[in-house]
Image (tube, rainbow, N blue to C red; front, top):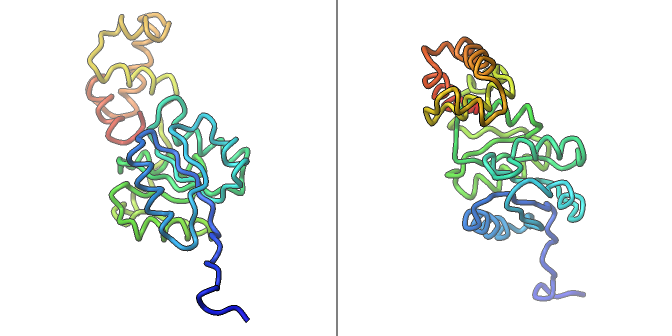
Length: 213
């Protein structure tokens, strides 16, 4: 008979991948989650470029992805996992609580969305719920956030508005995106109409606030 002192610790049952470009944040999240008896962080990444390979190699069950990362962001990484490793659930963790991010995260295949200042106990609970295929939304988000429609801007409009945020002149934007000035003006006009803004600077600000760019 095995004495209580000889009883082995329970095996970790939820294998987690963390992707965040901030090493300190990533390390802190890993340390917190590894304290849980049933959760093990088995892989870490600074962006989503090798997310599929890591998920496959380490048999990841839940991936915690930051939305804003260099090279390949969390939204693209989530879509890659949905297509290539469908059994891996995605929990999106971000500093930003813009409605557009929430909508985009779910459209990309995320099962849950939490902001980074969520208490550690709630983070672990969210990992468990996602693992059990339960959708989770940070309570700071209103139900209306999920009711926002998809991003109305085209990829090109998002690119041009992102450049317009700095106040760059149209000619400079045109050079950056390899389009004519007239074509850039057309895209800006379309984006202004979709956002209901008065000008391109206001359209860029509104799109940023919504999480569309």
